[in-house]
Length: 252
Image (cartoon, rainbow, N blue to C red):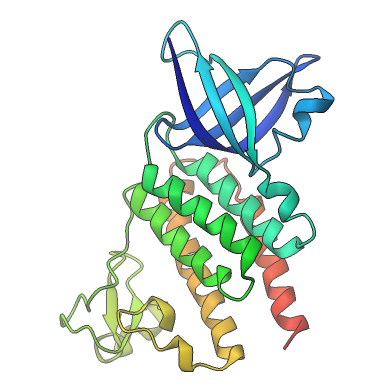
């Protein structure tokens, strides 16, 4: 059997002398693995870079076997981000999360489209993509069944002054209801609130909000993914956070 699809390269590892095994997030077939014969050669090495958008043909005798990929270049996101260490680290983090969090061969077309949008935003607009990254991580959590409910207060039902998130339920909590439990709740940044006011924030406050948002999504990513896979380490995400914090402090 065989199928054709478009995909993003998540990982590529050498197999034998001349081949590579790749993982790709495809638009219609989800996260899939396959052998690329000759993938270690000079011509294919550039095509199989993490983050590149490619055309894929998968062939295999059985649907659950490894199978082989024929790969053709579509767009090189990796080379477009090469001169921007922060965006490159962010893309590596996003692609690593996709490879770690998604089950194999389960379609997630909306997440595929959102991932492409995120990569394109990194290439075009440095001012907005960090907040998009936080929203992308929220979308990833929703796709794997750990979506947060930030629409109204879990205690009062109000949609105003939502500043906390319950670490147990993933639901928003308003300032009044959450004040007695301030130290035990996660913080909700302004740009994720139902009526965001981040456009009126100072540049420093917006940077703080980005870090608060990443702390929020990071907590639930660890809860959703790492509790079930304790040997997995989110090294790429930690590198991204380190570079992001340094970049914020350098321009403060």
